[in-house]
Image (cartoon, rainbow, N blue to C red; front, side, top):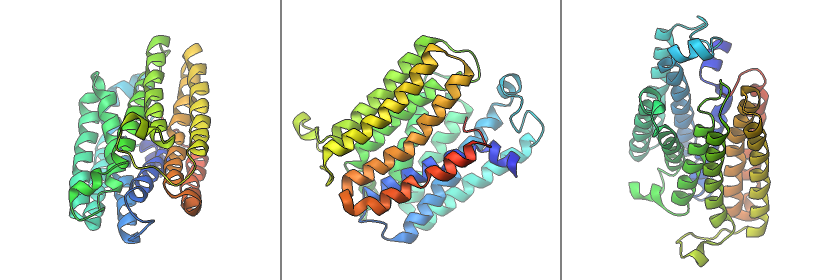
Length: 306
């Protein structure tokens, strides 16, 4: 069981569930209807884990050279069984999406295609980070896929802006992690951190209520924008401090923990979005999302996130 949990990098799945919570709450009134939210969370979790599995299925040769301790190259799990496991997770994800709504199945299918394209082909091209960012954006949109009565309800503001900015953020993280198992070059790490910060600045435009001044059609939140900007600033400082430490010492021992912080920050960012929309009334929801940090950080001690 531990080998399969390592294969799908299980601690990272809580970031995907946090995406669904943010996507759902930015487009619905609290967690109503609850069954739809639960089906979407299950769909996202299955699709996300399947992507992690297929990542290793397609990377056996590279992992044999760089990460021989991973479950497939170490012989703990055969490539065939890993493929079946990943396929089962993907089918399960699509099934849960269909249980939520046909519109959810459409978004989930697009997400599944992006996952497979990234893992099989795009990861080895310059477009790899863009495809990974698109996967994160689609995951947020999946959370909103049952909003309204038409599919267009999933593409409303501010969710669309948030999904775009989070896609940019994850594209930067993906670029940062491209050579995580090797001694890296400082310039690519610095440039990828610049992309990460562009995504965070984009989020600050909405969370700081600067959209009106810039002529962007983003509805304001209820919470004080100063408080949400302070929260975002703390997150950004934490990420940049860890990332710059890896830039100055570009070894796997510095890069991999920095990536872990970047991924866990996704949960905190999603909680910040929810707080900005609902204000003090949404604090129980914010706490619920932040609680996802506990299993993610706890399991990270025994199951690597990268």
